[in-house]
Length: 170
Image (cartoon, rainbow, N blue to C red; front, top):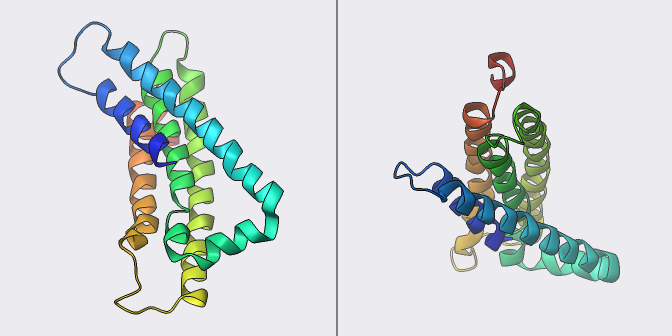
């Protein structure tokens, strides 16, 4: 999912770059489509892992502290898609206001999803893993990064989604 996060971030950065040239929005659109395709592929593989290996896959994630701390990457990748819909799709001639509303709905969905994943990850960390200086991985910051990403995604949706009313943006 980190590949999705990176290509989504590149899409947003290219779309909002102050130095414009012909084809810049096309490049941002290509990165957005790449993010969408990667998310669909990785989401399918992630869910198939649980469908085939059920309890073993869950135990593997919960018992491995590093893998557990990377679980919020799943909703973060969806957040880059949400920002992409607001920045890239809703500002096109064929996207417009309906995709501004779609990005707002996606934002509230991913906010709730991230909260559930964040609480689950931290509760699992507290219950299953001993907190000592030697054992805590650097990736422990990723669940907290997901909260900051929710805020940035909300700001992108409220600021850049085409035709979003002030009441809806608030």
